Length: 586
Image 1: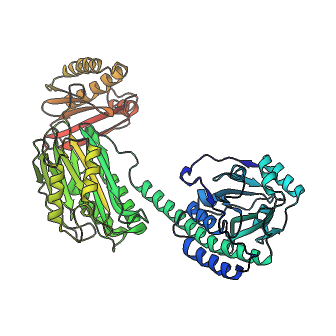
Image 2: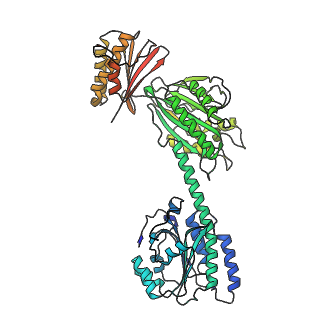
Image 3: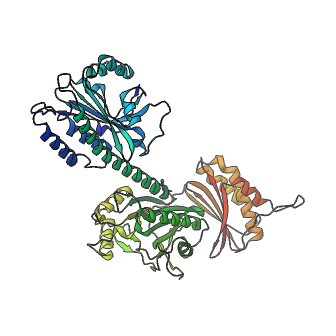
């Protein structure tokens, strides 16, 4: 029986048609010369790529019509899809995929219709195909009888199969490599051609053996590449978080197109208060070892970011952690935090190339941030720098592979990057994804390039539907004013469904700030991917959730917030503290 697979490899759907003029058969006087010529052609033409379908096509071009009038090559399906050998079936059947079909011009066109390329087929145990795969030995029918041809055609449920196989000379040889059977090759000759003999069997096996080695190499390459790409995709963010007040675009390009993995990474990490952390890092070296170290550092950076530490403190602790991971691996990193309301950006870097800021008027600047030592070296504190990002500006974080090569130094590469991001390079006014493509395309060095990671962030002004601020006096009546402000604001934003719960939580936070805090109280509502409510006061002491006794009149406010909010927390500020709650928006 057979099942048709989806046309996943439409570019490989072909049938090789070769002219009949000048055909040389193995039984002719020139057969010895032709045998060596055929094997020489096979050694040169089979296996020029690491693609299974292309390798199958190359065998067909060599074998048809010089050796057979028609041929087909089939391999176990899981070798193509997963690069793995399947478990041996208990009933002796074989699930295979047809890689290629070759047909001489004199063969009727229905042969190609009978055996379509890229078809997935299950051969029953009694068929010669399954027997060859089970035993690893060739099967030869000098003339395929009408009864056997009908049985094979009946299994296929195709009348064309019976017609093209009946009275043909039929040879099936296994594809064996490194002691395993990958599949088989079917050779056929028309009834009016010389039948296959024992010498032809040996030659057919030789052609199949050379092809099998190439197929197995392609299988191993495909398996390793899929593994590497799976590793890389699991280590890099699949969907970048799009924060409030920023548009984000990114690109990653490994040094090796063959391996497809490297040590560069980027990340966008949400922080309390709709703030965000932008991270770009570079582990020295290439390949899976650098990628594994990169994955550990990225997870560590995310963990440290969750503590809401300053950029300098994050890199200082990341440096200590990197020394515990692998002392021989050195990495660089730039870490920036951004507040969409104040547009304040705080940046620290550990041995990393400096960020570039493109202003709305087309001018650019290299952001002056103390370089520091790379991660894994020393224990010095990491300094930070802060700046306010203008509306419409683009901040570029990248790795040195984008700006450095053997043909140019870093300063020259950074200058070229600034030109691309400026108005003169026509990059600033384009869509951010286009800017990424333009930058990578223009800056990408030749075949000796390093890994490249690029993260672009464009600043946009917040609208009235995204931020609302209210200043409150340290008075007990402030809780009622806060509730009214929340209800009116959420009604304007079309968020009446979360208004009641938000009012209750804000009322508790404002009441706590008035009773236990100091100075004026600030209330801020932020509408991004979620709804964030912040209450600020000038007391540095942080609230602590405690278990209230049954007779206590207070102490239940934070328990209520902990139950109602998606998450909540606190963070210190230069003037005191902020307590925030976050709710998901449907």
